[in-house]
Image (cartoon, rainbow, N blue to C red; front, top):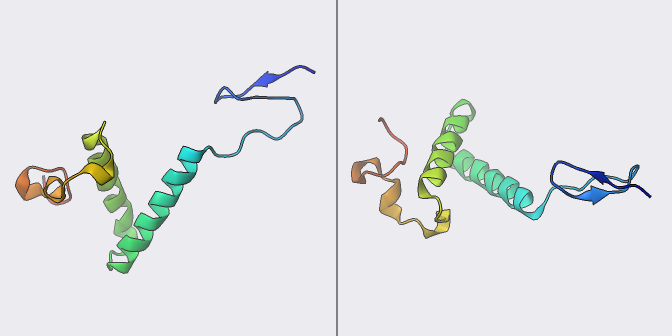
Amino acid sequence: MEKTRLNRGASVHPGEAGPGPNEVEVKVAAFWQRYAEVVGREGVPEAKRVWYQRACERFIRHLSPRRLKEAAAGEASPARGGRGGGAR
């Protein structure tokens, strides 16, 4: 039976279901779900949460290649030269 190449390079036989989300996608989605829950508990209005997420995404890119859990608390503070929230 002929195989078909999918975007992610996974091969499946025609007619079979494609691959589900990979492990990284699942972990990323779970991270943002937890992040949204925490931001909501902290009282951030729904309309502003997207900006908090974008700031967090920028900070994570700034850390690359390090992981978020390797960041020191001071790195997120704009007063200490970090890329955390606040005016720029």
